[in-house]
Amino acid sequence: MEVKKSKKNNIISLKKKSKCPTCKKVSKEPFIPFCSKKCANLDLLKWLTDEHGLEIKSD
Image 1 (cartoon, one colour):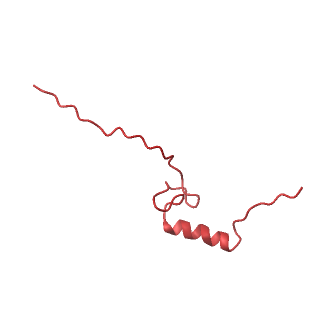
Image 2 (cartoon, rainbow, N blue to C red):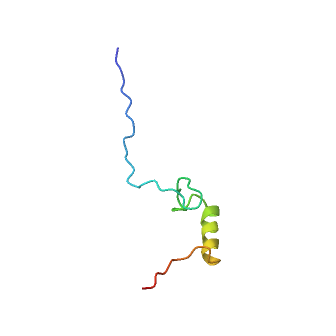
Image 3 (cartoon, helix red, strand yellow):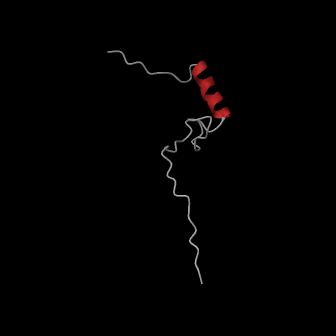
């Protein structure tokens, strides 16, 4: 009796799976770092309405 060994695909992903900054789901192509176009658009809207902003420290 011959036993066949099944070869699994041993490919290691070099990309770190990141989370969407808007909803915290796993990021997906082609929207990285976001998971969807909706989350990307929500983030853009926050930047355009100054909800997001860079904190500028004055010395």
